[in-house]
Length: 144
Image (tube, rainbow, N blue to C red; front, side):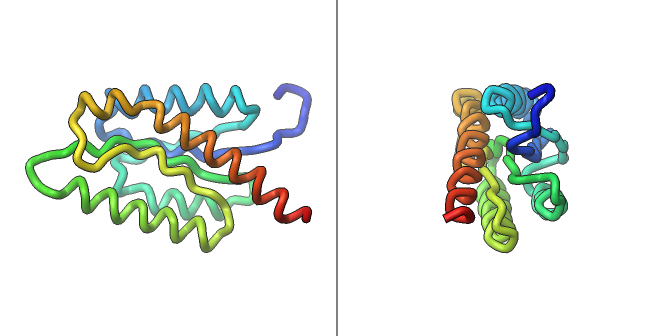
């Protein structure tokens, strides 16, 4: 993208909890954003449940076109993973609707094992793809 105006700037919000998995997810997301010609700003949060405040701040920025969430919520001994996923997904979708900016949900879980989480690291790449494609769709609607 050197020398040309950026087309898309994404905020990548990466949970550090389960870092052995999320670091791989983040790398895939960054590489795919670069492949698509999108600039990426990475923000780390402790865990998936901590994402909504950061999503809100990023979506309020004029230089951020969309946000991609990256995390892995692995099943424990309780239903804690389900609570985290539902709360974060609901907050993310509400913030996207309020701002008109897309939020890609590249968070895996609930109910998965660590092995399943590793098998699903491409979900982060897929979330980047979704946000970039949705931005193109929104741009078409605006210019119609």
